[in-house]
Amino acid sequence: MDPLQRAPENQATPLVGYNVATSDNALMDAVRAYGGQHTDEIVDAITPMGSLSGSAEAREHWHLSNENEPKLRTNDRYGNRIDEVEFHPSWHWLMTQGVGFGLTAEPWTSHSPVAHLKRAAGFFTWGQAEGGHMCPITMTYAVVPALRADDALAKQWITGLASRTYDFGIRPPEEKAGLLAGMGMTEKQGGSDLRTNTTVARPTETHGEYLLTGHKWFTSAPMNDMFLVLAQAPEGVTCFVVPRVRPDGTRNTLSIVRLKDKLGNRSNASSELEFNDTYATRLGDEGRGIRTIIEMVSATRMDCVLGSAGLMRKALAEAAWHTSHRSAFGATLADQPAMTNVLADLAVETEAATFVAIRLASAVDKPNDPHEQALRRIGLALEKFWVCKRTPMMVAEALECLGGNGYVEESGMPLMFRESPLNSIWEGSGNVNALDVLRALGREPESLDAWITEMAEVRGEDARLDTAVDGVLTELADLTDVEVRARRIAASMATCLQAAVLIKHGDPSVADAFCASRLAGDWGGTFGTLPRGLDLAGIVARTTPHLES
Image (cartoon, rainbow, N blue to C red):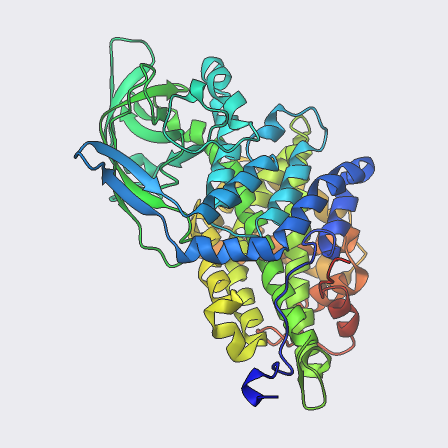
């Protein structure tokens, strides 16, 4: 045989043909823990998502949608202003699946007692197919709590937003089988300081209707059917619904200035928008816009945690698969002691993120439970800060497990690495979320009570966690220079919450490794430095994905 035609030896095959959901022991354990008697309902829903997410077809669309980026068309061939964005067919395929799985606004209209938990497990699962298209899916899900501030607007939009039909294109909403939502808050001069927004909202003669003039610095998915935006009304910062099509059927005066040239998330179109007497309907009271739109922000932060945890899991799966199918120095890479430690450490990080994300998602299904809502309030700020902040480091280490192969675009690892910082920036950077933790502790003492209650439920089961919790309470007893210590406090509280859910419901070997390294300080500060005496091989064994028969 011609040596050039010989099949390469000692190369891992692509990780395709596996079920992203059912092969993930941490996800399945978390679903059982928080799904209870409704576990089968959740598993039945996410199993087909997992099968498709781990398919060769999905992997191809993942690459194609990012290699063929969206293109802005400001005008048609005759010079008419159209402000449309063209996407590759792979984007539309991904959106068709994600919307079709009910990952947009359906849970808000469902009668299932675990509707949001089921959707969270599905978001975690399907999001591993490709991250960019999950942005409009997230915003469409998250807009509903804010829309409920106005019964008429809720009635007008929610049914379409909850549809399982992806219907692309700018047309009157009543003519479409499904709708998508977006949001526009930040402006050039203010960023996260939303009270400095300069977009002006001028009331018309029709009650509740306004004309907006101004500029929005970041608005993703500009082809969506409607957006929540903030603007300065006579009484202050106010929230508005801005549709792409006005009630009379004409296109709204909404100009796409340009698409952002981003580090990652390149399949998704992120834009700058210009408003020039743009039609809008007020949502909520004038001057209460931030309070109104914060309901949407809370839900998007939940997806930031889920998305980052899912990205961790995808990176871990690739690393575990590659190292279990490639040999060096007489053994598979995964069986080499140093690599075993790395993989186990990555698994510990991933399982903690997965469990805490599912735990917080379960609280959404309990809107009338004060403890669950208080925990959700503080927990989302904590884990949005911590999980999203840990993801780039974790993905970089997983990439290194593939060696040079991981540095090549075809592996998908560079794509994941570029995606990994996004959720730490979107919906509030690390500092914004760490300071939001302090805000919650100061203004909503029930949130600290909820965190303490969660810690009390496992008090005495691990001395390392008990010591860490005492350390947090000591930090909080002295509020001198508390903002300087905001990240330290948020990190400590977040890791304690992760430890608590792992001790309560996780794999014992994973919980032991987490507490030894993340809480007791018996850790070298980088992945692969777990201490002696832990069941590293057992942790790795439950991590490696298996192909579907």
